[in-house]
Image (cartoon, rainbow, N blue to C red; front, side):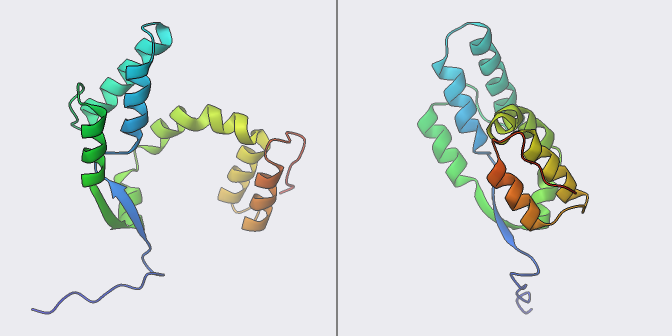
Length: 141
């Protein structure tokens, strides 16, 4: 039996995947460093839910979690990696979306949508990112 033919990197770009996602590190830090106020309880519940979702013991020490994340690293084809995370994008967006919105402004989000719909090109998107925090700047599309 012969080895499978290598695939062209251009045809199938590779991406690093963590079977135990790196975001658990941040969630663990937020859950274990806060007060037991409303935000602290919310952070703990989010950590607990994600840890259980990924099969990680909730009471794990951070150093052990770091080793677990590192040991779970594999390289996958881009399309397979995106397929695995198909249901994760919305959840991740809710977690980082408001901070990204504050950082880049609504014009950046609008430009991303227009790029996705094919109304502007990569160059226009890059210009919108440079304009970033300037909410008055926009890309016509």
